[in-house]
Amino acid sequence: MAGMAIFSKSAIEMMVKTEETTGDLHQAVEAMVREHSRFVFRLAYSILRNHSDAEDAAQEVFIRVLKNKDKLADVREQKLWLAKIAWRVTLDWKKSVQKRRPAEGSELILEGLSARGLNAEQSMSQQQMVALLEKMVATLPSDLRETLALSTVQELNSAEIAEVLGIPEGSVRGRLMRARTILKQKMSVAMGESNG
Amino acid sequence: MDRDEKRIDELLDAGLAGYSDVEPRGGLEDRIIARLGARLSRSANEAEE
Image (cartoon, rainbow over all chains, first blue to last red; front, side):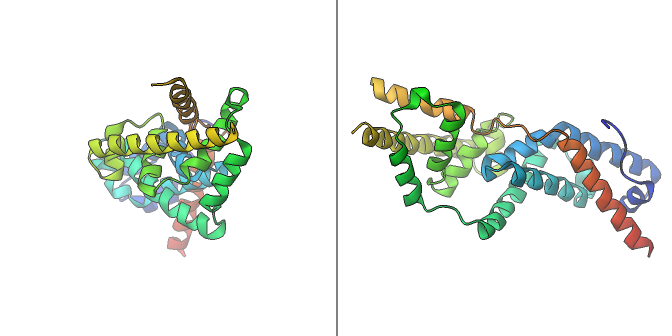
């Protein structure tokens, strides 16, 4: 199925005025999906923390791309342009998800952490570590949480994160430092409690 | 940096390294393209009616 054209001719004709542009647009959108869909998925996942939600959000991102088809020709940095769309879509998606599935309160999360204890970190798998980290990250202030989450998307550097968030790169680094400091304090407390 | 602090740093680094290191289910690209195609077809049909 790779590379196969799925858009019908009549559908494409609705999008653009000329046949020449139609063909270009068709190829451009498919190429964009094939090149960037995993990146868009990972960006959405970094915030939503759920495969199904992240996939739905990724699909919505490319629907927005179609809605913004008039801007496609002027896009210089495709990945960054997509990242900005993905960021807005993901935040909207998160709000929608939170209405349907309210998150745990932070007190419950921290109680759960202490009860589980972190002194067994040597036997913890990466998956378990990530699960515990998710609970701690969820307690961070939203600006720190979102910046930290974006920083874990391997395709994004700090300059690109700054572009997506619309803040100076120095602020990104500052937020990441503060987030790490808070997380280390939480881990230290949890480890101290579990070690008695 | 004392031993505990270093250990916490390493744990945090390890956790963050895998935090968004995930892959979508196979065929994500095809599902997205199919959905876009269906959406465009629907729009085209509505315009023709």
